[in-house]
Image (tube, rainbow, N blue to C red; front, side, top):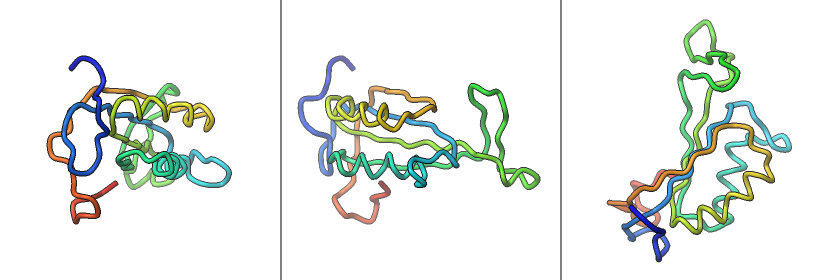
Length: 127
């Protein structure tokens, strides 16, 4: 894919988009609120098409410490991925929010294509 989409990627719209993935620790916080939750609420307030949070069961980052959900390590700070998909310009306009939150985790952008958008308020909506 080359270039940015010209229209917003929202319910009922398919086409080129940008996927923002922010990986943080489960216990990372912003003003006593989980950081992943703050990111989702800011994405919603910014009018982005959708955001979902996925909890990892095992992983490691820059510290090289392996975090796992296995029985003997239930208290570990597991990785959490916040995934946001929308039109490229709208996603890029949201990036300063992550700077304000001082996100220390991994942040990636990937071009993608929305093939089957969810219906607004439909049963298949997860974000």
